[in-house]
Every structure is written in C-alpha cells, then in structure tokens.
Image (cartoon, rainbow, N blue to C red; front, side, top):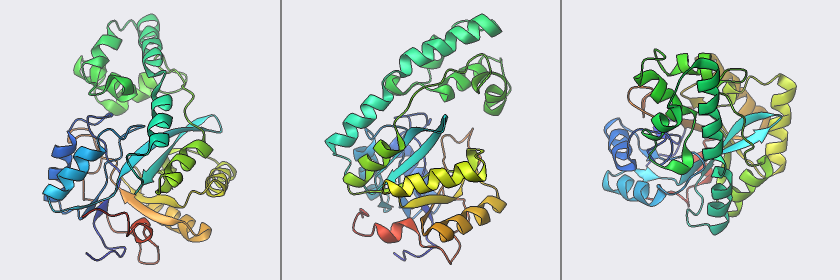
Length: 288
C-alpha cells in the first residue's frame, strides 16, 4: 500500500458507539465499498468500538488505525482532538475518557428542561434517548434527531440554529477534558494527537495560534486539513498552517450518517503533495 498523500484514507468517522447511526461493521463495509484503503473509527470520547472496527477492517481488506475524538475545553469553547494509532487497551486512556463522559446525562436533562421551559417542547430527554446507542454518550446530535423526526425542525442544521447553540433554549455548556490531558492520553498510549476540523471553531488568528502552540507544547503533532466541514479554501488554508508549524496532515470525512453527513466516506480530495500525511508517522501502528 502506497502511503503518500494520494492514499484514500478516512481517519474521522462515528458509529452507534457514540453519535453515528451505523455500526462499526456497517461503517467498515461502506468505507471499503467506497474505496477507502486506510480507515479509522473515531467515536466521541469512547474507544469501546475499537475491537469491532479492527476486526471489520481486516474482514474487508482495509488497513486500520485505532482512533477516538476527544472533547476538550479551550478558551471557553469546545475543541476536538483526534487520537490515531494508540493502544486501544490503554487503561489510562479508558479511565480518562470515562471521566470525560461523566456528566452527560445531567447535561442532557438540563437541555431537555430548557427546551420545555423556553420552547414548549416536552419529552425531549426520553425522545433523544431513543437515538442513543450508548447512553453514556447522549449528545446534542441525539436531541437534533428527535427534533427533526418529531417535526419541530426541518433538518439537523435547523436544530442547531434554533435550539442547541450558545444562547439558545437547549444549550447547556459542559466542562470537557483539558488539552494537556487529551494529548497526553493519546501520546502516552503510543498514538498521534491531531486537531480536528480547525475551521469549525471560529477562532481569531490569535486564538488559533494559541491553540496550535499549546497543543504542540503538550506533544500534539497533527492537524486535519481535508475534512468534511472544510471548504476548498480551508483545505489550502490549513495546508499552509500544517506547513508553517511543521504539523502532520490528516484527512477524514467526519461521517455520522448516510442521511446527515455532508461528505460520504472516501469522497474527500487527496492531501496536497507538499504535506507530510499523519499516516507516514504511524507506519508501525497500522493494522493490516
């Protein structure tokens, strides 16, 4: 397998173990059918699906890197850090992620109370639970599916615009892991930490510089350049960022569902040839 920037790698997607709608096995099948050669399942704050994903990737002839996407609080906002190629049996990581997941149920109940009190939407907590594969990981996405399917909103973006972002009736903040903790869990388990979809955070240039430099100070080494929520202009922007800071470049669709995701597995353009792909630093961690 050629491991240069033209490799069709998809190193960011989600299953029912967090907030996706497909099982790890169905995701592996879809990825393989759509030409993915190197795959990673990166469920939110969870590594419980890794053994299934490893087996499924092997069954479909795909190379595999272990993965997760860790929620971090940075500068008062939620930032996501993807971990790739780590030991998925790391006790330290498992415990850290368990602690990070703690409090999601209380947060979800507050969200439901806000929707009822301010928007008159009853039964949101119970309704969202019907969409949850893992109750420890109930999230805004599950509330969004409930609100769409019950006709309160037209689609998932409509839900977030009206109800689930800061200042709206269903928004409740949550304190996640620190950047230092997330990067530490990943690197001490033998993996590489990657800043996920940096174009989504709406940081000022100074805030983004602070994120990248602190991330690197803790041992972070990569950044997503080509990802489902980036525009073509952002592909170029974050390719320049990777070059400027000497970061490894990653690529992933951030696929959650055939009905909801902007980009399907395997459909992204390749990384620019001038970049060093993250998988080049993980050749000894790739499972075949």
